[in-house]
Image (tube, rainbow, N blue to C red; front, top):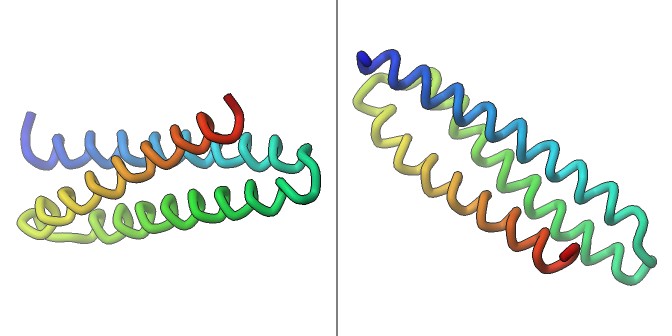
Length: 99
């Protein structure tokens, strides 16, 4: 697989995962809407945090699309960090609040 093909495949994978996280955030939001008022604030704070993390990764993805090959490789490292951070935060949210 050529470098451009690898780049395209990575970006497609990243974009698919961003869509999955959006769906998970939407599910968390729906569950949070059904809890009592005092707990709802905590749920919505958690959801806002997840939304901000996802937006940060989306911004990184947008910048990666426009980057040169050399810059793209450096940016991929940052994206990998954001990706791991988002995955861990989403799993923790499900475990903490809804397991």
